[in-house]
Length: 117
Image (cartoon, rainbow, N blue to C red; front, side, top):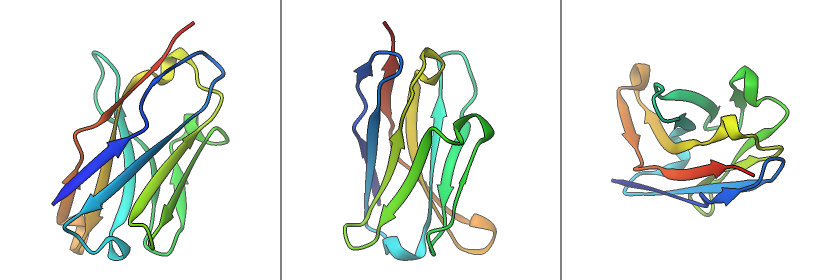
């Protein structure tokens, strides 16, 4: 199983990015997908999730700025990030969860997002 994130880059404050995650080796449509991030010196934190039926949820600080979507035909989950600020600088990780109480859990290696003037 591999989860490969892409789309990380350096952007200026106020900029936008779209991250992608394309898992392989799993039946994508039956996995709940999520994005997490880890800033330097901080613990990994949850950003957003999308269920198998497309229901999305967000961490409070991301609401209104980030949008998570999934395309089951392309086996890809996206994170559209708008109005980026330096506080959004982090490594962003893709997560796939399935099974009772999330017993099956996979992570990508992350993609770096840097927001600076």
